[in-house]
Amino acid sequence: MRLWTDRLPSPVGELRLVGDDQGTLRALEFDSHDERLHRLLSRHYRRYELVKGTAPEVIRQALEAYFAGDPSHLDALPVATGGTEFQCQVWQALRGIPAGTTISYGELAAGIGRPGASRAVGLANGANPVAIVVPCHRVIGANGTLTGYGGGLPRKRWLVEHERGLVQGELALV
Image (cartoon, rainbow, N blue to C red; front, side, top):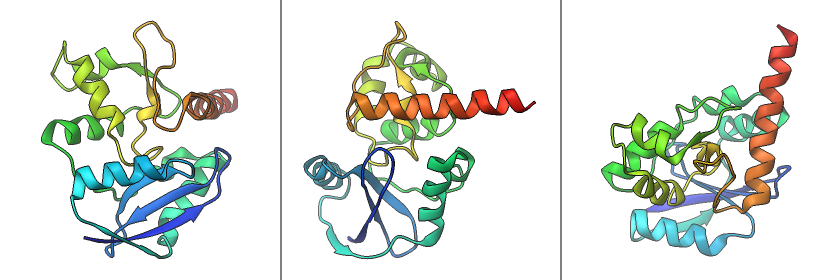
């Protein structure tokens, strides 16, 4: 599989974007996590080739809009991943968590009809290759604490606080 790779500056560090010739986002990783990116791509696609390219403008604009304060642009971005049926089910459910909201792994497991599978949900969450767009950062521990994040807890905290600030700003405008 031949995939393009591009970079985009952001408030949480440079993002590494990976996609296909159809303009579909296949991975989004943080600048200092190349090893994780290659591990996830290998798991999902076995063989792949990364070539330097330019992300489609719709992807770049959606991410820039997100960081500028409008997370709704991410909802329509086409995303494709490898992964098991269960992982894909978890990742689809992640896209249904509204910006500014957090849920626990147990709540996510129950939401996909798999109560008691919170550990499996956590593993699928950790294998998500498309950070931010597939918002795994919105899943927290049962006690309300921020737990593991492939991009690091400081980034997870920033993303959650960014989104909560946007939602609170919307409520203040109503």
